[in-house]
Amino acid sequence: MAPLKECPRVLLQKLFITSLLGAGCLAVGAGYYFAARDTVFLALSGALFVGCVYRCYSLYRLIAGKHYCVTEGVCTGITPKPLRRYRSVRLMDAEGLETTLLLDKRTRVKFGFHYRIYFKQDPRPRFGSEYLDTALSGDCFLGMEELGEFSAPDDSDAAMAKDDK
Image (tube, rainbow, N blue to C red):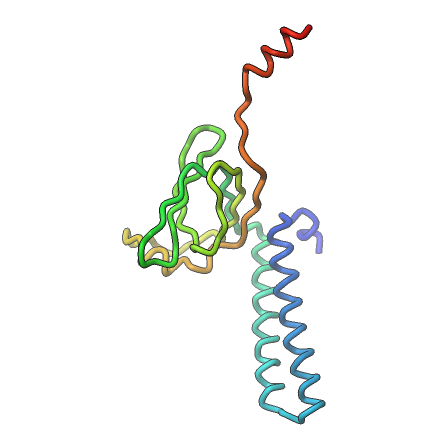
């Protein structure tokens, strides 16, 4: 459990919600089984529970081994892709390097905000096709933290403080 102490909050939250979802499915299945004696529903909820346990285990191994990448920067552009389930998001880091990411359209990203985004380290080969690469790496996105709105250090504030003295 020591790796969970230094785990990013977003990944810990994903682990907690996945385990809670699995336990909830099993509890509902067991409750319905005792009420209606429906063994098929109990078996299906048990299968969901086993799937959630496997997902939690693989997420824990990912966290413990630190097999994830972190991309951090300010959102400088959002380009929707027509007829696709994703959009192109450009982030600029502190050194001025720009990174383009393909994120699901349901991921809420705002222009001018600072983000930290977590991905699985993906050993799969890239094919050069944006659509094919996105389809094959669909489960690589782990989570995102919004670190607040970006505000550039303003020299006029320092000059005004100097004038007040």
